[in-house]
Length: 272
Image (cartoon, rainbow, N blue to C red; front, side, top):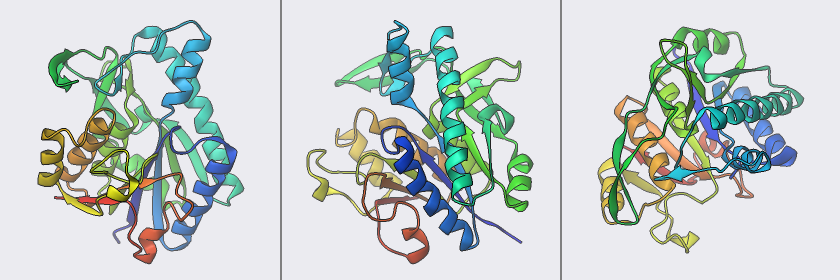
């Protein structure tokens, strides 16, 4: 029997602190009570940057993505592992059986090649260093947990085929996993209401978009900066067979997750 799987991605800009985590955990619990299976993937960008600065390291981003060297990777792994425990603890408090794990226990990754990106209207060559992308998902590892009623909570540290650790953008990790487990929907929790036609006006949110329309918004500069990696991850997930990607606001006082089982319009839905 096919499982109703939802992959939920969130990070520190949208869900931060005990109250936010408990709210998210209670909603995940409600989804699960309604016969859904949930895989959580979390980042921790703000927390990683804060810890780097505390240690005298200089966080660097290019085209919305973190450049990673050995020192950055060590901090990222330490911070993400700690955050992962907090998420699992909050789920446990909400009566969800959960297990935390690094991405390398359920995926295979490879180092991302240098690529061309547009930043501030100029084409640049980007080398992110020890940053990877998902090339395979250990599907049975995740499905076996879900069948046993266990919710996987994954933080985005991957490994390549030689065992070298890599920092993976959480959106990229979530999209790869979503494609690998044939989920119904990939939910990207952000700190904005969805995709906005005017970044200064929340009322300009678009309810539904096709990939072609998304590409047009990138081309004309409406979608830019840190939103581009999120949209790229959405594109990859849809092309790999995920039916729907939804971008929602983690700061919205309404439901973050459970609107999907009530068919309440929420966020921006992207389809092929």
